[in-house]
Length: 424
Ligand code: AMP
Ligand code: GLY
Image 1 (tube, rainbow, N blue to C red):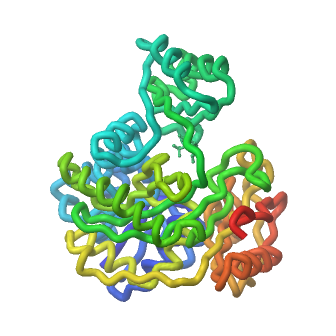
Image 2 (cartoon, rainbow, N blue to C red):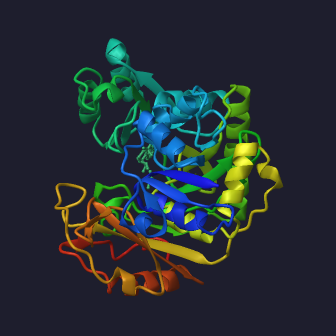
Image 3 (tube, rainbow, N blue to C red):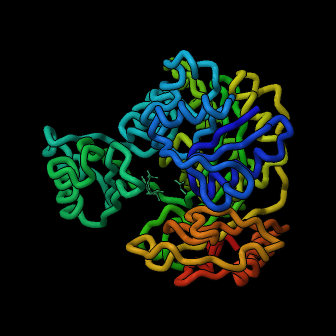
């Protein structure tokens, strides 16, 4: 069977490498892909949110399954588009329809969903420009720091954490009245600040059955010691040492089961990944956010630890018999370190020639922002490559990742030298 992966990051390269293990896949396509996916699959240069272009690609290449990497096509309804088209309706899409994608596409929806189904999360209220004064009054009932979230998708920038009440009020007004994040901040969720350590748990579901995938911790800040601006993620570790069996059991009982049951009760037929961002506060989980896709770079440590055949699992999602699929995970630790362009997450240059990555032997190099120009691999994004290694301990795996990175070069390459610093 031919399979299409939508997206172009390290996550999609990781999907492609893992799917390649299946002898049931004949040809693998990635749209638009990167220089890494180009080596192992066929890249198709289309935009994943251009659904007519996706349709053309699917029909021309006899594609029989579509795996959606990023959230935008899901929130915009790629799965619904397939179901509504007589030529596409029998082709399974791994990723929720619009109704399920609202768990990520609207913070207000996801908070209402958690409240309704008893999933532990921070106390909150939502506001628009029409009840701004009520928003100010709600802020006055909270202790700092204040957490303000744009309701809609804001490219990872829509969450503000502010220490002063005055600043929080001013930012709320900027968001709802002056559209600081455009239409995305017409509604703003204000919630209590959660204490604890963050981690992520990933679930694959066919709408009825689920598999809990390995947990991971992501390092979001650009600077060492978790300082500086937020990025898409600078590195990740799996498993998370403080997410022990007792904690993960609580996550399953208090978060995963009510989430899957809640989707069913609400008539949402959800087929795909759920990324649950959690705070661990003294052993108790509280949900910070849902995403309706895998994380990046979390995928680059989660998928390599899965020993089972990913395509089999996806068939289980499509045929709603995920419960019949075997699932196992290695005990080894995986770490990944993201190589980024100098300047990222602010302005940075692209088109830098990359060398040495083919000499890496002890790690897996996942391409993210890379492309091919005049036959050479050059940088094409802020996050360029994720270097993943296995070890018996976090230290052992990280040492391999850093040794491999020593072989890789491009002008102004930057990376964090302290991934996992808080865990070792
Ligand atoms: P989100 O996009 O909802 O994941 O928020 C981005 C980041 O802001 C999270 O990964 C957390 O680090 C932080 N954050 C969000 N909500 C809260 C909260 N209620 N309490 C503490 N930190 C939060
Ligand atoms: N690494 C965080 C995310 O994928 O949203």
